[in-house]
Length: 585
Image 1 (cartoon, rainbow, N blue to C red):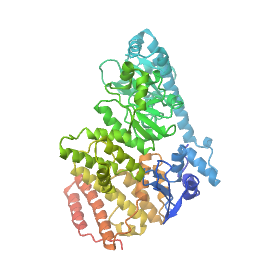
Image 2: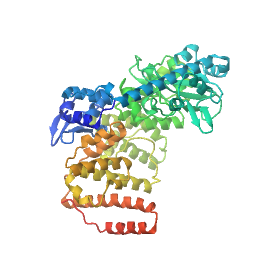
Image 3: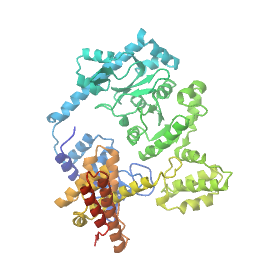
Image 4: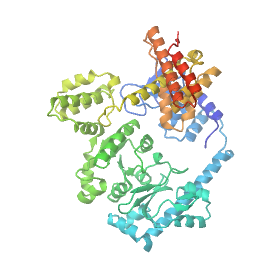
């Protein structure tokens, strides 16, 4: 259930974040904050910071951040409601009974109806597969090598080539058009009603409690799209569920295999690898990583061995790391995917590939290496430069040295030379491996990031030194923050400042349902200002920051000006902005 903002804030205020986190993590005070080893990733030196003043935590190593509620959600894998209840009990606060929350009860009852609809649909698709009408789908699955036991285990089915047969079937069950539309199984338009899926092999998608929450449908033959998936619904969120996890979470293996598609998962399970899962018709996300971490800290990526699969692996690796998971990458060459590999080589050979799976960082360097011709000294030097930047990301000295040794040995580079090169690179220049960096299409991207950086820094200034608000109140408004997330934050922060109390921890409550957003805002509020800068440098930086934010806002306004008079006014403001004399002290 969702509690009122007043209840949430009372719970948060009554639980000092230093005391709560201190019961899980050993903290030592350094300056105004407390530091300890991050509980969300492996590290040797403390980079996990807890601020009693801001009632926030932030890890400078992995980027995790938030308030006392999100800490429990991360650490204990609690839902939001569970974390609030835990903290309320700790503080002796009585929470309203769920039965009193009519809105939450209605939402829960409606979700139950949608789950019933999915269950009926799954039974219907399965029945059709076993009927004469579904023979084409059944033959397709048997042709892919699936046994009847596997078909039953995954509840596979078939959607007949009819415009609205599923709709008619579910209507007879007593469901309303609104409910059926929200189920994602039908489309209701002015010109008629149509089933979402027809003439496809059907893959029921289940949550970890074995409840059907959606479907994937695969076309037989060369039709498009190859896979069609249920849309997002009140019970189906692609970024927070994984295909096969309802079975894989009970595996005895200490790791999970992450695949690209439904058939990969099913083929692996049939071959005995019941720890295989896959994303649901979307790229692997940070939320997927956090979901996996509830069950294991080790994953093996088993993506396709073609170019698209390699790119998908490179995109997934940073997200897996961000979730605090240990990652290896399996190669299936000369075969494309797990299904093809196992059919040709067998399960034992696949297990050997799992055992030989490459460390994710070394895989990234291996992919990077393919773009450089070592016969050309200039290209070899470029590779070493790029590899050094990648190695510079590691903050732990022992871990970094281990990787330097591994890269030096693998690519015939002198260890001492490579180590010196890595140590000479500023931390700001070190970047994580993704794909080979491309030339910026560039100036617009750099400008956009510069604008975001200015907006981000201005929020940091205001959170750290609220007194400066009076200096910008007549110049900057929340609408001047063109980044939507920063604009939302500015609205909340400006309101707090005008009321006389700045409380970053409370602001984070508003983003608690969006992990990416609350971590970004936690980083904004936990960024430290440069205390070593001179007074002149601080004033200059502040003035440039304010001007850049306002100038960008005026440029956006000019693009949408409706008449010349409005445009003229904007131009006058732009000219006056260049003469702005504003300072901190």
